[in-house]
Length: 189
Image (cartoon, rainbow, N blue to C red; front, side, top):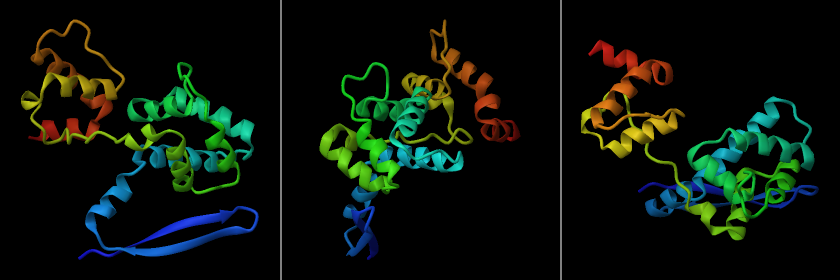
């Protein structure tokens, strides 16, 4: 039986954060806790770390500006998360303030994601796709949809590709640029 202690933070940033710990023994509950808000916590965690690394001034305006800039380069599920919070140009709603204000007080990203979940439940439905191990996967056994997804993750497209072999050729051609370790492992085989 696996036992994990989850810490739940709550409180006021001026008075300090209190933490309450509880033991969780159900493996399904542990998995759902980790997967809940996976994209939100990951994206905001990387974003917060980039703000700290750049010694940014933690005020709303600077955080919103940095968030918009970060979302401009986001791809895949991260881009979808940015769309949901209104940090993309085509977003219908704007709840960026629900991210920037708590970040300016250094609120933990998990707590921010919990509050975002209450605003828009689609945020907690976002999950990252399983990553393929390009060192060992047989590209010929993958579906064309999966081959297209690899190229899309790399920011590439295969114009003029009509057959599966065209996609495979394009991926093996670009592999040294985007996945050098996988390309090296494939040449060693």
